[in-house]
Image 1 (tube, rainbow, N blue to C red):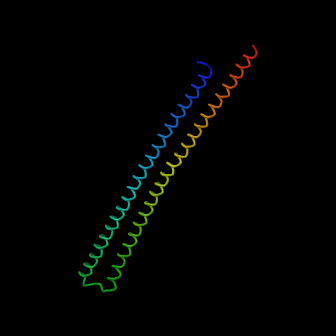
Image 2 (image 1 turned 90 degrees about the vertical axis):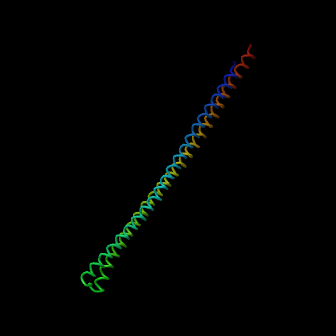
Image 3 (image 1 turned 135 degrees about the horizontal axis):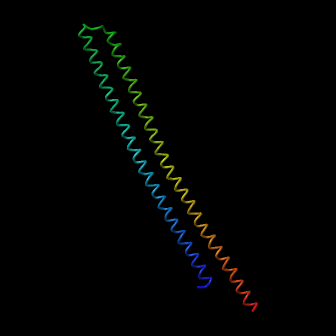
Length: 170
């Protein structure tokens, strides 16, 4: 095998190595996308679960307030009634505390869901950034291949010129 054959084999081997590296990079990108999708699905499940739990907490708090009001009404009736104003004030206090509790539960739910949504966005951005990084690496691989092929061409041209000069000198 002459110099030309060695250069062709070297360039071909470099091309095969570049394609293998690019295939590995494609696998990494796919794995990153799958990981991001799994993470996003899990965070979405957690968001729905958080909304469901908050709804259950609010329903529990409403039931508790209803029981408190019923207990107050019964207690006042047992004592012969405390008068409309006192009864209204006590029922209003129970309702006020209930409203504060419901607002707190709702606020906590919104903060948790916003946090989970931010995590979803971060997961998607990580996957996109990995894709961009891999694209850059693939471009670098290709440019490296072209540089190697060009260098091999220069070596071949110099060797051919030297061989031609040697022929003419003899």
